[in-house]
Length: 87
View 1 (tube, helix red, strand yellow):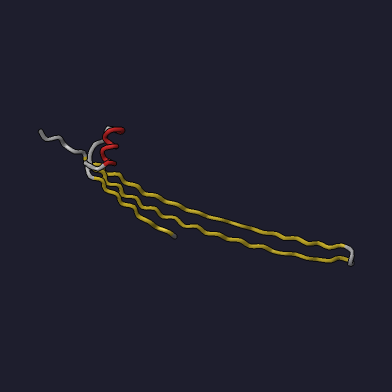
View 2 (cartoon, rainbow, N blue to C red):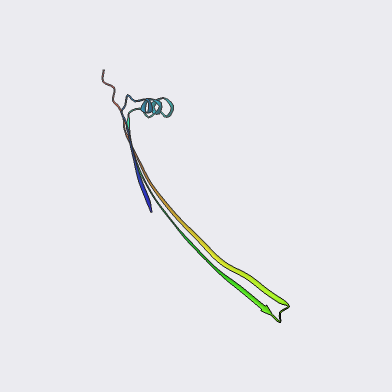
């Protein structure tokens, strides 16, 4: 299992916040909190079969089963604090 957390905070005067205000009409400070959890499970099983009949016929067989399970969860929160204009 793997877990990682990403926290980003941009002040209202930062480049990221200014781009948000310019391109998305959302000026102000931004706090982003993201948590990622993922894990994977792998299961592999094989069976070999070898048989000789009457010294003339041979059976060679391989049977297998494989299973892979992956679970990924993501939680993302975006908190925006709008700046106020004081004149």
